[in-house]
Length: 448
Image (tube, rainbow, N blue to C red; front, top):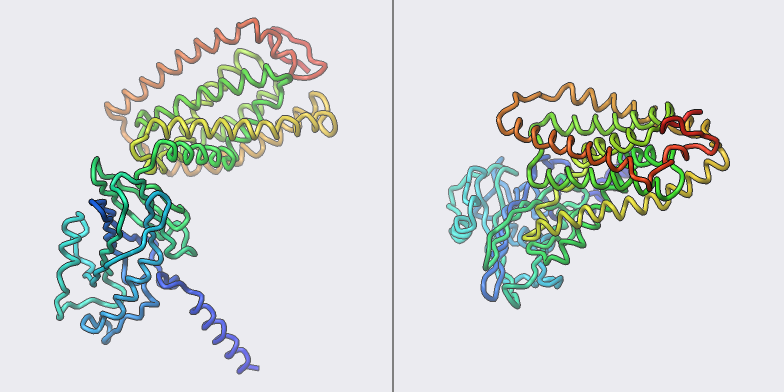
């Protein structure tokens, strides 16, 4: 029986070894693994210059002598490593994969700093490594330069990495794009990023950020729960449109402001925003239970919408590196994507809510039960996030922070005045009287 278990263990080991890709060694993978790369566009050709940690090339089987890599016998292993780079990093021209041409490569010490610029990296790769160089196992780099024939320098170029797909976002490729004309730009991609345009057209940037905005709102469960809180007491499309529009305008304002760095900085601010978003859910749910007043509901929706906009901005800031030269287009497209996703969610949410009102959650009692469940969920989120906020270091406000705070306080005052005016529009008259079928308006408040 013991022999059977040994054979089974050996078989599983061989199977796992055969399944490992050439550019991965998960058991020795480091959390800070980064592949550095340059993409240089020149007349008639593109140059890909790559530096990858040596420990990623387990299947290249570098020869060792004791605890060091046998540098003098490493030429075949370097060729296998270059083949792995060609396979796992693909360069595209107008969505057409380019064929890798001539390549040169060498090993490098961990202390080498030649990849601080493209020119230094190219000169470094062209030089042969000294025969007496001592590189400990898994401690150095594989540096490679690969050429590609291109059709035109003004084409749209993209890059994709499939290195270590089982590692997800833990293995990053930090690439700097050097166009033939214009400014260079840097970005970080992973195997989950897919083909990433290095110099996207405005149409490609717009479509990508619309999709990103839709994904962000659909997967943002706290935003969706807040949206549900907004529409629970409402009857009729006019009431829904008025409140959702206020929420949209408010979060669009802070989303755009954050993209232009008009937001507080520091590690304390993200957990503060997340805590405030959870608090907005609890407040709105409790207001639904106590009673809804038109002017207050519009005002609070606008104020909390500003907070949610900061939350949306975190999903945007991580991806602005993919906007290329189309920052404004990408910002607008991201916001459009959020609104499209919001409308799709409402298209599903409102019929489901109407069905609940006519079956399980009838009248005001049903609204109270649903709002209480939402408040319970929001309270747990707020408690967990408040704990993270309490541990965050609070900064000493500087001149810039005071200036940003003054700007947003001015925005809040102006928005509050505008919302008070909107609440008095004749088109919204009787808004609060529709919170329940049997409700009667008493000074704009819904009473049970």
